Length: 210
Image (cartoon, rainbow, N blue to C red):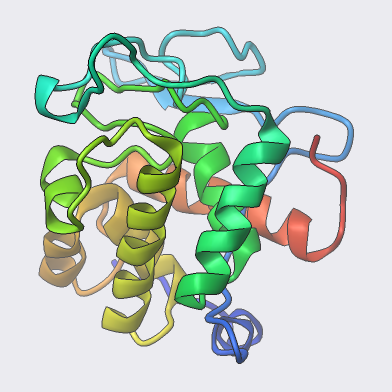
């Protein structure tokens, strides 16, 4: 099943001098719901940010090759993360609002986040992606965000500025997007794309998120 952006969002994605992308955010004054699929196949929607099944709440050590000796990571305020995201977005010509939305979705601005699948840091880099972009410490916030933004830009260029396809590839892999010639028919990936787009639109509309 192929899912495409409307012409409005496709036009926004091609704005210069940056490549603008899409979002998905919490309603004004309230946190975005956590949506995930339970082992029995049912979809769970919760506002409880501490739910261990919600993105960014998983706790696991990162692979040793990507850990700095004696620490897991550093604690950063959301404002510091947003500053890192903005700098990397400007550097690599990607809309900073999309980058912020992706970080919020991936790790809830938690630089220590490591998923059960091994994704690490603010932008939840998988080890192979971290190696591809020369990351020596995937839990270092600056390295993590820079590599994540470079990866996102590469996906945007690969899919001609189509934000939905780029986000789907960030979540499920470019191979899955290519195989299905569109957003893969995975419930998790569809939920992921919709939630990031929501956060992005909130930011584009200037609504406070924090």
